Length: 346
Image 1 (cartoon, rainbow, N blue to C red):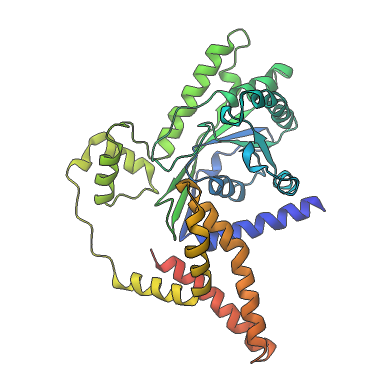
Image 2 (image 1 turned 90 degrees about the vertical axis):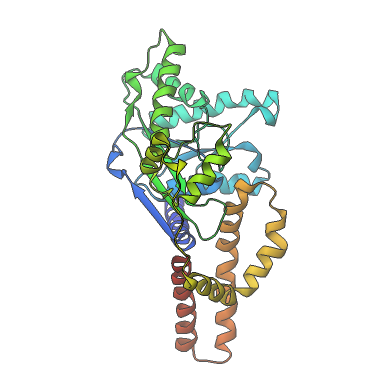
């Protein structure tokens, strides 16, 4: 029953993400090995959306480490456990709380020994900046714990580059790039754990920089982003953007073409169709989101919960005026029109 419930929830989330994003691009799924434990390591830009995109767009059903401060109530703990979310503790949660990570890492190692997949964001925090931040060594502790108990176990790492066209806006586009498998045993030396950790972190860091846009110069970050934006680069193609950065082609940015007036028309039409939801979001929910990295996640969760309710209210109202088939057809048309308008706004 639990598996059926998880499968239903996963399909629901994937469908909602498809409706929410104007486009979701997936590349490199053929790199995923089967029949062995896997650790997915992804860059972290857009809070919970990163995890949801990965969890719903691959052929594995990963557990994923999540910041402990979201496990605030018993109800949330039960929900997140159902969703295969495992709390991980950071220094900001209190120095004493870090000790609890020992049990968390041991649990993750046991999951790998059972052949499961785990998703970890090794940067340790999220940021909408288009760069890969230094990696923490927590993921190596999990991997090496598993190998110390079973040195012959084959564990694979699959790096994932998570990319957004404009992570804080709606509608947005997303692209996931799955990198080539890294065999952990090739980097593990039980007599040199420190060296093993450094080598593995460096390899993962190198791949992640190729799978997402990486702006190396922090001091010139804002200036470089402005030039990239004026050059109208495709952030869903990180290889091409990184090539532009490498060749400094952004020094002479090209002018953008004119925005089609139809895009404004589609946006206005969408706002009219969803006027109650947009007012509720813009006036009551959005002002309470202080962390820009949580903006898209909050917007998505708001739509995930409120949009079905809006459709239900619409259906009930229509049933007072029309027959069941007619009311159902109008609701279906309303749903399809919304999806089309989201796609057309790009």
